[in-house]
Image (tube, rainbow, N blue to C red):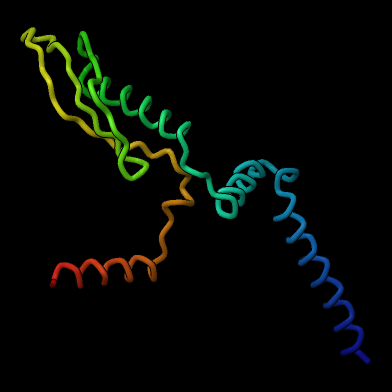
Length: 141
């Protein structure tokens, strides 16, 4: 008789907590301080962002600003040509006037713009070991 009572109480509590957990996961935008982070994380995992022209323009804009700041905000800074490779790497041919010497410099510069959420760059040990094995096998050939 005791087993029946304990089982009935246990299973009711189990179903209650599972229901609450599923409800929290499915409706995380309504619960708690971290709700926004959890909701965005779930959306980034299950509904990934498509790389499009708008994101490419954003990467180019961020790349231009970052390179300008890395060079120390030189005078007459211009980007002659630019390209985005691998959706994150910004390469450009820049022309600017050096502040100290006054010479005009034309150089190729690059930077990495991490526009993707952290979920896109998340790796497990199993995945990393597979990638490492492939890299080693290609190095041998």
